[in-house]
Length: 126
Image (tube, rainbow, N blue to C red; front, side):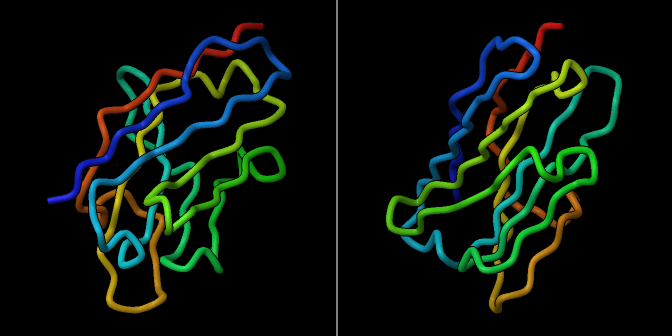
C-alpha cells in the first residue's frame, strides 16, 4: 500500500504560479510512474501530466503544455507539479497518483493508476 499526500494548492490570481508536491510513503518510489490529474465537480478526472520512473519521460495535456512542469526526486519520494501562467480554467482539485511499473514505460490514463492521494484544491481567480 502506498499513501500519497499532496500539498501546495491554494488561491492564486490569473497569471500566477503554484507548486504542488506529492509525498509518497514507500521505500520503492522509484518503481512507480507518477501522474497528476485534476477534477471539477460533475466532470471526469482529467490527466494533467505524467512522468516515468526515472523522470526521463514526461507527458502533458495540451491544455497545460508550456505552462506546467512535472518533476520528481526519487531520493525524497516526491513528485512535483510547477504551474505557471495559471488560468481560471485550471481551477480544480488536483490529485497525484502512482502506477507500479516493472520497466521504464508509463501511461497517462487514470484507470491504470493504483494509488491516489486525497487531492488539493487549486483556485485561480480572474
